[in-house]
Amino acid sequence: MPIDIRGLAPLLQVFDMPTSIHFYRDALGFELVSTSQSQAGDRFGWALLRLNGVELMLNTAYEDDNRPPAPDPARAAGHADTGLFFGCADLDGAYRHFRAHGLNVQEPVIRDYGMRQLYVSDPDGYGLCFQWPATQRTLDQWRTWYGFEPRNGKDIATDA
Image 1 (cartoon, rainbow, N blue to C red):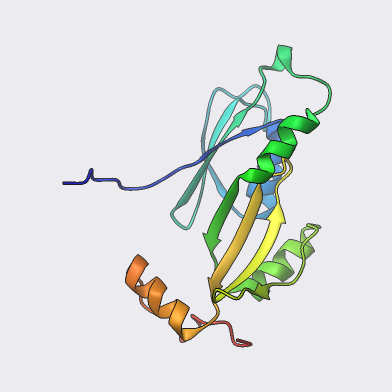
Image 2 (cartoon, helix red, strand yellow; image 1 turned 90 degrees about the horizontal axis):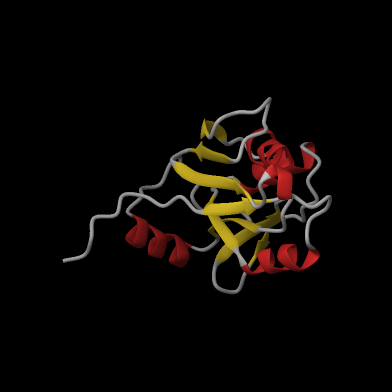
């Protein structure tokens, strides 16, 4: 019998917590749910963020007294191997939202495996992919895998 898992909250190590909080809360729309002891403003060592049931934790990579003046390029390059994939039905709206918040993002594209995707990197170089089924076949697979029902007939990209 498998274990009863009820969620997942990835933990990302970040160089500068205020910068990361600004990105995830102010640009992406996550709610700041909980933090470790606050020092002042957005300066703390750990944070739990939530958006529409999706949880993400951030932790500072360095204690304040051990933090180098700039991120280690080798460490940041390693973050490119980490990708977080978010279900997002309104990719055109997400694209406009990201652009309005000054993020460097390209328009969504349809991949040969039936997903429409929009990529952005966070301040530490972690890759974020916002995606949604672009074909009926892919949508039907998602419905089976994730057990969701269509909302307002807008489950598939209209330009697919």
